[in-house]
Length: 231
Image (tube, rainbow, N blue to C red; front, side):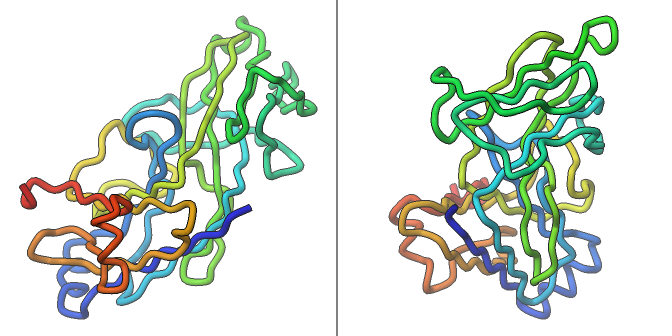
């Protein structure tokens, strides 16, 4: 599996302001179309913060409602992991994931599950992907990156992307569902030959921007900055 690394640098004076405001570095990853809907990692910032991960995923099930600010409580997870793609896992009435089934209807790079939990027990459950990382060399094990409600006897297919959304916020912890990302956001697009990106915080725009080494990635469309101050 590919391995990626993201380094986020903040000048000491700016770090003092960020700490005083109670803000944290926040990372999220999209699954399927649209923006992410789960805070993957909420990180107490340092002058230099490093995040490393592999493109391994797990599938989880939960009774958590898909609502703004809900903290995900994973109740069941595919074991052994990581999960396999190009097929599906049945989620059984015993509240466990069954044996992986190959399925030509599921593309490579897509993970799937079938919710076989009886309707009279749970009309719907929340399913999603989780992923591990090393944050400043400390493990963050299998943190959810997505959440979607799946009715009983229905299937979910999940295709993760290698883009990383980065912004500052003080409201949400890791493993929290969000309906919308607010704030100035940098999107680092990993994959192909791009496995290592370094960003630095720009206080005049309130967003992480490429350092000199990564500056050409903006021209190549591999780093996107979403802030109205750039318009």
